[in-house]
Image (cartoon, rainbow, N blue to C red; front, top):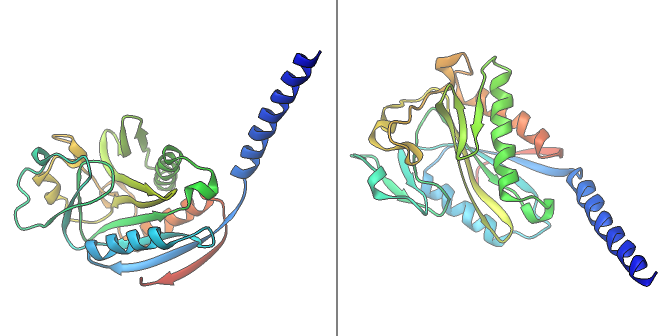
Amino acid sequence: MLEIKLLNEQISIRIGIVVRQRRDRHLTFPLVIRQLGNMDYEKVWHAMQDFTDSRDDAVEDELWLVEHPPVFTQGQAGKEEHLLMPGDIPVVKVDRGGQVTYHGPGQQVIYFMINLRRRKMGVRELVTLIENGIVNMLAKHNIVAAAKPDAPGVYVDGKKIASLGLRVRKGCSFHGLAINVNMDLSPFLRINPCGYAGLEMIQTQDIGGPDNVAETGNNLVAELQQLLNADTVSHQTGL
């Protein structure tokens, strides 16, 4: 009888933990949408690091929207062989996951400054959330897009329209997504995008989607703030 009682207590504790975790997932959180305009990559990167290192649980989560001047960024595991001919475009080695990608005008970049520990969310969950946000946004423009389990990002007919790369430190994320809108795609030919030789990159304006960065950012944020359970949203500009 004692063993049965102890077993029942253990089951009750486990059920209680599961129920509490599920309840926590439905909590809502304030969210700051920060517009940075067009800003140098390294300046924003270091600002992300500083924000993450100095934040505590009282700091609200933020999404940073930005366009960057032309730059290649190489992830922590990045291999030099994927930099084919960077030419006059600078290459910055950074602390996110993934291989090499390109950022430039006409591409909406969104950085996710999210306290994952507070939300009881894993990094894989955040990746899926971001991908779902992009897929949902494109669906409203009658574009059928999908994620790939073995290659983070979002694809349309096997062609890549959005890239993802994250870093988690102190239980908080930084870095994020880049979706191609109305940009010069030719610099992607100078690299193996995300480490995949011959991967074709496309953009929203060429497939019936938004044709400007502002519209894309606004539409995407609307999807993301729902998925992030944002109860109150405030807007700020600049770092």
